[in-house]
Length: 329
Image 1 (cartoon, one colour):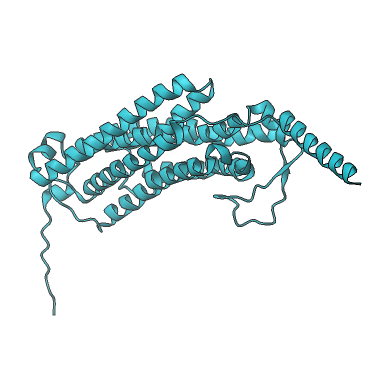
Image 2 (tube, rainbow, N blue to C red; image 1 turned 135 degrees about the horizontal axis):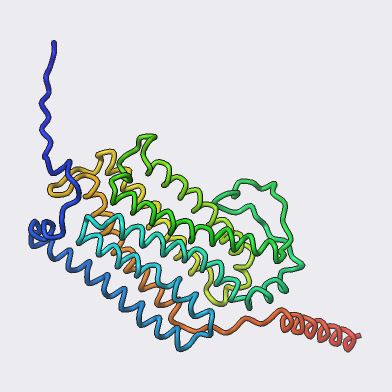
């Protein structure tokens, strides 16, 4: 027996994201209070970051101050862009790409910070020139325990920097290209056909991301024991958490929206509603991380001793122990 099923779909579920004025008109009291609270969080995050920049500019030496400003700005910048995307749904693609481009620079700056904390490139090479680095770290080779350790050299350090820097450059270029194609109607995240541009650009960006994270992980795994006094481990953990929340979480929500798991709620289509939920969650998460960053970055740390001073102290301890042994004898 044939059974006819008539399914009615709200036309709004098939439309583009609504205009900002349409979003404001459909807000009830609860939604309006929620939007105001999230906007307040984003503004507080930005103000805390600006105050922190003033502190870092006064207290920290150059060029470390520039690096710290970039890294500590990841959470408040993402929160601010998410706030714009929440109020102006049509601009979500631009705000997301702005946040992602900023974080691409942060990935490179995290590597630079670890080198600067050890005295810069020359001191870093002098300290580790006689040591070997393990390279079987995530996200590329964490399961390859058979990989040999490599000697640190100026050439290796250059390639590690280049591996992180390429993401900052190519991500920005590809984001600009995506926006240009989007304005012409050629870039659509929901278009998963082989002829679509998104299906080619986004996986390529994913590969670039993995390549850039590997050099940062290599440096961290080999130097974190030397930098525990400056709270490197919690700083690196915050950087990793921002990476997961801004990249992986957003991707999962977008996939659920494209699959229809996130229901349409006029005037928001399923995809637009997924983006809105992602922006709201991001504001709350980045606000919390901004408060934690205040504890980590708005303070001064004692400078690490140079390799020469470290060797002198070690030789002095050895000489003292030798003298004590001779005295006992």
